Length: 467
Image (tube, rainbow, N blue to C red; front, side, top):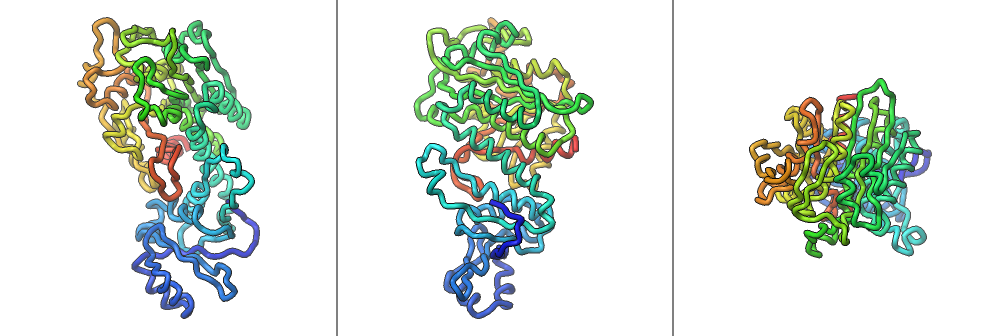
């Protein structure tokens, strides 16, 4: 993927449609004729292999947007990501006047562009063609750990989401979290099965009790006690049948990704710990399998929560907010400086902003604005939606303190966020990201399948807040 060795390499040369002609004027007839014959026009995400006289690769011309050249911090992370998956196996180096930050981001994108998930294919490890290698310049040698941290964190999220439910149940999530804790000398604890009732996590138990895979509340803590407490909470529904309100098969097909929130907080935690952000980190994952059996929770049931509030179940397929509310209550008991939760929570958010944009909610509007600003230049888009309090009436219940979802069906992403907001005190900064966690199409550096969404924007904000 990367090398810092002094080996021969072919230059990767970024060009725009506007400066291609100027570049060619200084080149040999061979290069000019080759570019003309291959009809390379420097359109973004296209490239042209320039051969040497002996038939080897002399250089690679590739197209970029004007902003990638004139304003490198626009989104260089994806500028060479496509090349990493399409170029022949060879060693290359980036040859341009981009600043160090831009070249760092491009190198991260290169690593993300080499990603493949094929662990269940027989020839994945034995016959897979080695990916091309990017040679880092001397200035970037000191950034190799940072580059690796980003690539490893994205890879962790992608691998967890891509893993089939048969290999990623609550006990498997627990094992991954334990390995991460061991790697960074963090403290790991978990509460399993009926012990959840004894320790007062009743909604986590209710959602997961029907499965042969026992529900769990996973916790990892890292950092110095004197640093501000940052709490990350991830929805860990390892598979979601919808419960007794059974999903149609069309919508159940991808429900292995319903633990995408848990994958995100593990990836973000990896990034935070790897880069040594000055926070006291607490990572909480309610891990369950929303299955069906004789003891599954039912529509119309009234559940107790850790907070003491009672919840009427309108729909068993609105289970994610049920497991999250106990985790939010627990986190709030420590009065953290900031709570961030990631969750594949609602289809309504996908209707509102599509599959590639996380919907963003906060009890502090300025916090939402800060996160959105932090997304600029990352190649990601996150979009704030209003925590519109008048919609809270849609969650009113005649038999309990609150319903888990609105029977009306309108503004579903907002009412889900309003439900979660009930379990976070007003004096604690809280951020909620409703994510797809899945690419429905192939893009540069972002193959179809499991994906980390909003991670770049959130980490940039955290680095500004605590770094």
